[in-house]
Length: 389
Figure 1: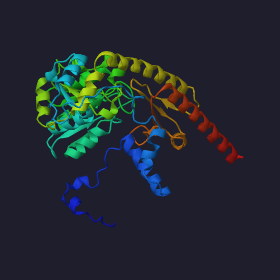
Figure 2: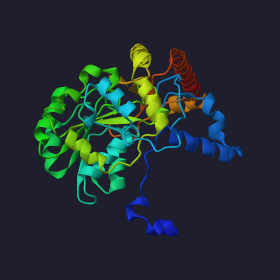
Figure 3: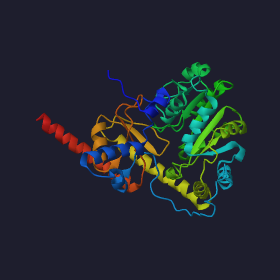
Figure 4: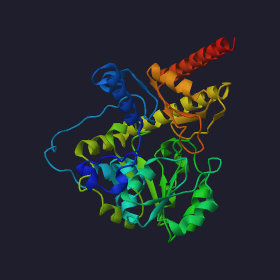
């Protein structure tokens, strides 16, 4: 086997980074495809040219832009470490004191901070329960932390399996509602893990999608479990994915520790200003209306998928997307993509062979994706009949 010639930078980098595969976000995958298409056709900036012509149902974003006002009065100054207007707004929204909150660049930065704070590189490990969000493992690899996997069983936690590993890990990541599956984890199972992990491991409950089922949040347990950390984001229900603003909820002691490793100015002034507006007044009510509309469209999509003969399984969802399994995975994914409709192929995830995930967009977008899939399946069936004859 030929040995790859390393650049001078690669020779200086940590050895494990050379072969590491970065997290493949929906946008990153699309950009790679666009660049490949531009190279094949000789076109320039293919991704930019097609960005606005696509129907984006692959990244669990909310459809439609928001309306916010920005001031540039203080743009020449560094922002506060934790902007007061933002922290007070989220404190009121979450009903937690500011001392138990940390604003971050999306929930992803919260994941990284937790691993950096509680895992010593090349000594400690995290625990994940696949299928689950890919950034837990990527962030661990980037820090040099080990990864212990205890797979889910029928979309629920293997509590006994997790407990058996608690002496071997420092942090447990639980995603509820889960991504890419969409289902809530049973609260009794989460609590069982919390109980067993006391004085052993930090338990992180990632609630990026909790606005779609707020009554199931683990936040109320923070006072009883000092090892609990809850992650939140404004990227989903608040329709602010481009803002990159998230929050870590934990005890005052944990927030103090995380604050020692976060960057000195993690939240820019414009981000703090827009996020503060989103968390108050009419904008907060708008978020709640958006959630209810999304839930209606989600249920409509689930009902429709369950009637389709080419769908083997539709996963329960408490988030803003629906995961389903189909033997026509390739035909549907490629066919939609060819017509400018982007969904997410999740079939490489453990236990999710032939699974596709559709983010809930506008009613027009959902009607179009259903109509397009119907046409694709009809055409695929017609071709199969011709080939048989």
